[in-house]
Length: 131
Image (cartoon, rainbow, N blue to C red):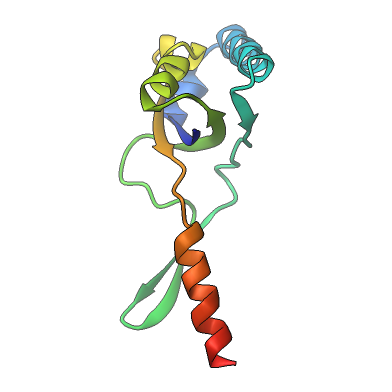
């Protein structure tokens, strides 16, 4: 089963870490990524640049764009991980061992990949009928 894991962090807490602790956290996190990869669980996932972002939404029938990520909390999304696991409980087990969780540095939101195949097929059929 495939999961998308959203990794949140507190930028102020991150910036307050001494370089040695920050470097150790990254080293441990990347080592754990390697463990997940070797076991066939890590399917990829990028870090996200918190300085380059926009939020796009409709407001009063018009598209509006806001600079930066839209966050009403102290934490913001810092990365995405694509994970393979037996089920949600297994995904939770895998992510609970992540060094950033153990250090209290990050929060991970785990979401199962949705199956849109039937909806996509129906849409394709409707669109073809219009042509």
